[in-house]
Picture 1 (cartoon, one colour):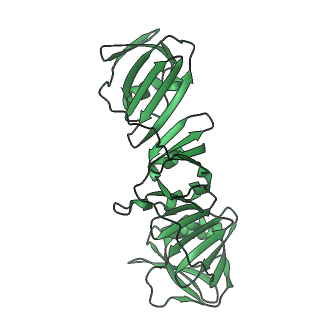
Picture 2 (picture 1 turned 135 degrees about the vertical axis):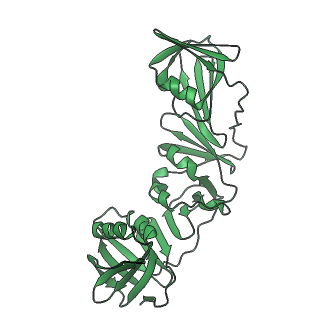
Picture 3 (picture 1 turned 90 degrees about the horizontal axis):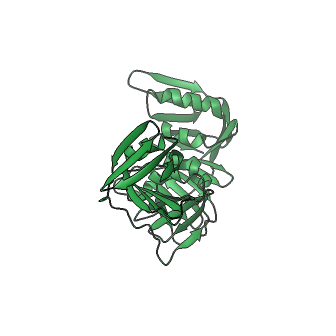
Length: 321
């Protein structure tokens, strides 16, 4: 049978190809997640099933077209000037991807949480931090120190957590179904991506986002300053002392930089934060100027349906008034 190399996308550890009734079904899987893609072909009577390793599958994707036959656990690939024999992984285990009877369709748009992917955690115990928590009222991504929230009507009743490994595969998905244990995402081309869900998920927290102080800062200048300071330390002190300043220190160096911005609410500000957290937050802003709020517990960014925040670092002389 003739195959086209462009069919062989999304190479994973195990890749099962089945031809039956004029349809080629390709199942790429890492067991916990994978793709199912279907192609219609003219050869209605051809039937075959074979399984390829990731390396062999990727190799076939590099050819424009080729003829393929199978016999005795071997795969024979022929082209005008080449012949290849590959192993058929007949003993490979293919997971059951069917959803349960309580499957529902939900309104999930990956564009709503894509900007917050840098906020995802990497916790071996609190696994709910290692993905996007889809709640009835929106999306939640957090590493427990820094948090991203996007309000949305997702159409789900019980919160689920989609693991971070799935993020890069569901960018163009426009349909999502779940039974609470597994989720399936379908893109505009009809390609299905499935993933097992985290065993636990986080509901939307009640944040104290009361604004006590606020600063308006030139985003470009602040971002350049933070990235420079990150080469020396992870801690940043933001304070207003006649002018808005950023201070940082390492074992051998001290920095005191006047920021291109001003205090627009409040009278006193002196807080210490994690530089990486602030970078993630201000990168959410698309405009030239970013507005950051402060209260007695955290630095907060709010715009439209997005809220992002990070907790302060320990500091004996903290001031937010």
